[in-house]
Length: 155
Length: 177
Image (cartoon, rainbow over all chains, first blue to last red; front, side):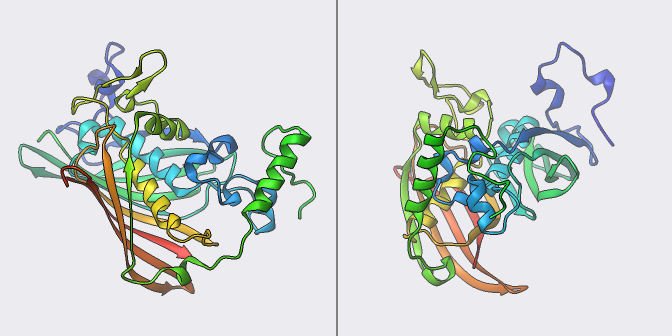
């Protein structure tokens, strides 16, 4: 696993300085993701509509054959995007791409952790166009969401 | 129903809250069609959305994202300009993508049963300033079946109401019963 060298990190650095992808970041670099719990209180927020009880009511979910209420996919996309903003900064908002497939349901109370890896890097103007493989898994390692992100850093 | 599963299985509730919840869920039941049956290829669904600072906070809190660039509202200071690499506060990158789903379902009243968002391919062209009013437009471009499942594909654009600036473009699929 490629990470930033220890001698390039120190306790005086901000998180932004310590973890940001730069033009020097190599292919193979792995991102440290964000970790969240699929909390039923957040899944039931009116932000997500609250018109589909499969997202927040255990009784309704059971009646429709689910093991538990399931998160809306937008939540895991947001988790992956948060990780990408941590590493790509402003580049995640301008000229970026984010593809994501929801390959398994996230159940209430599961612990979800995102991850990512730099898979390609091509010159783009004065900077580099990075391609990242990204994912969200539960704490048993089951993949829940998979995708890719492209962004230009250093242009 | 599995007897070990109850309304308050996952969060504490009093009997009043349980009853309110069951009544609310009962009120949601209505005759409805599938998304597949409600949407035709060529249908364009569109809404304007003003992205207020408070709406951004609601979204960011729901996904527990405390990035300070999104803060155009704070306790005690109320609405503020905020700070980001683009000047003032900006909208989280995937926030408006969520509201695409809202536009899609908003136009298929009553709620289309058994519809699941399965993927998105999103181009983030420009940062959206907090406070902007955007037009979210989703066009159904394909209906297809794959491994026995039915999907409706949409092409989505998000543009600024005033300037016409393209903020975001997206391809997304809804799987339908």
